[in-house]
Image 1 (cartoon, one colour):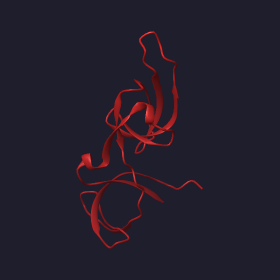
Image 2: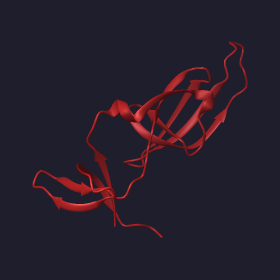
Image 3: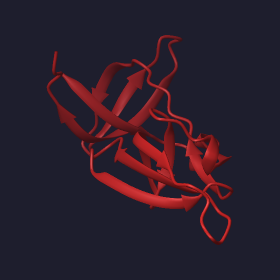
Image 4: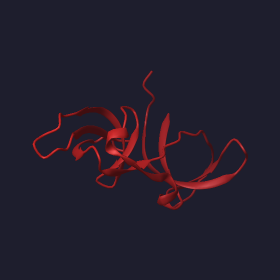
Length: 120
């Protein structure tokens, strides 16, 4: 079974800034305040106003909701630094938080936001 959890901590430690033209398919970006994975992107030719546009199609990494955006290639966007880690569940608290242990033995708390069965 797969569990998606949000680890507690300051959001700014997971964000950086990057120019739209440097985004790549399968990368991660913050779109409309949501961490998303880029599933498709394309660029248009320079128009009469001199800016190349980047068309990005993303999936929210938590809800799988699709988002689309268009931005000038020279604009900066927030990029989410996403890492997948494995944790051992140590316990479930009454308020819906899990107590998790990582491979180094450190304990942290996370809230369950979605779960589903692994598709092989």
